[in-house]
Length: 134
Image (cartoon, rainbow, N blue to C red; front, side, top):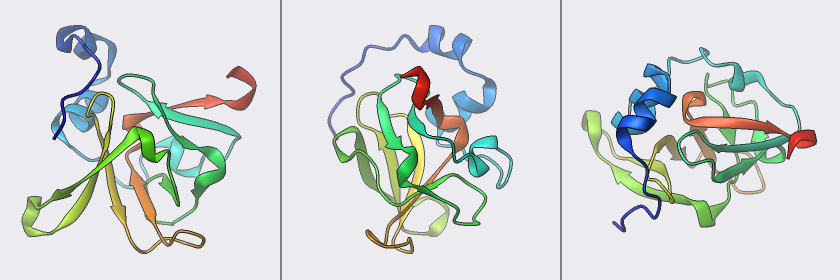
């Protein structure tokens, strides 16, 4: 896997992020289902990586999957890496920020049209920027 292009100071990052954001993005932890406000947020705007602020998803790609995590049927492929994850005895596809390699969540093939994809993203791994503030 290629190295991240950003030079993020881990000590500074640990001070800036909440413990949950750190655990999710740096240790591939997972938010508890239905625990993050972004699960039910459908305002216009964009979702950026909480670590490096690279744009990952547009709000018009978001849908209510009823799974308990923010879900998107597509993302900005140029800013996302997908890699095989065999943790917990299962084979899944992990989603990472291409710029800083922060863990974002997983992607599944059970999403809606037009892609059939469901990016299941931890709310703690992203930052929402409303359309009027961009």
